[in-house]
Image (tube, rainbow, N blue to C red; front, side):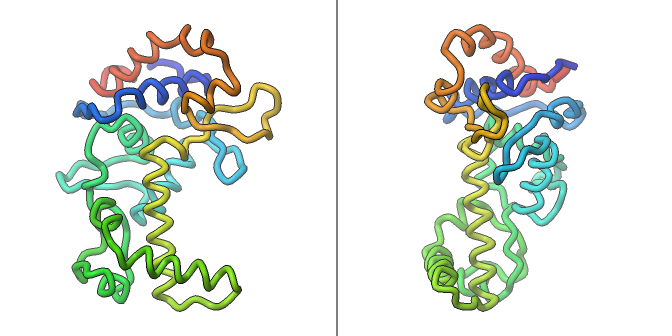
Length: 223
């Protein structure tokens, strides 16, 4: 198994992957890959450093209510596998019914099927009613007024959608640390953000092997 020991190393991997967004390619079956070393990489989340394994698990639980996810085709996804698949866009996650909406009154307000508990990002983000309720809830919080259950649940679902969007566009992945001070804000693997910390030659030097690793994940080949 390849050794993912450098944060910058993985950051550039994600940056390279982002250049191919919109060119979705189906991945091979990655369920047997060993994500242990990948999961040990650090990420900054809410100002705290934690392993990517922890971040991926917390993310999947927040989105789906579960620590693993079985998609509509019956395939089970671990947190790390899901995170990489989402970042590399190996499948159309926006159409996958994985976003938890459990409160019946909210489902009724949004015109959703009452017996269903999970819905796709595409379906929920197209709702006009959800942001209306969530914005009302935020305004009530701002003026320190209590929220009812409907407003609380709408905020939770709105937060899930925001997290999902940030995972998909890479902005949630604060994995590039400052070379000067570890407690400084980390940045996502985006061109401008990365060049504020690392020069172009540092990124270019490891481009080819990282492209090989992207292919290795897509092909489920000794990741």
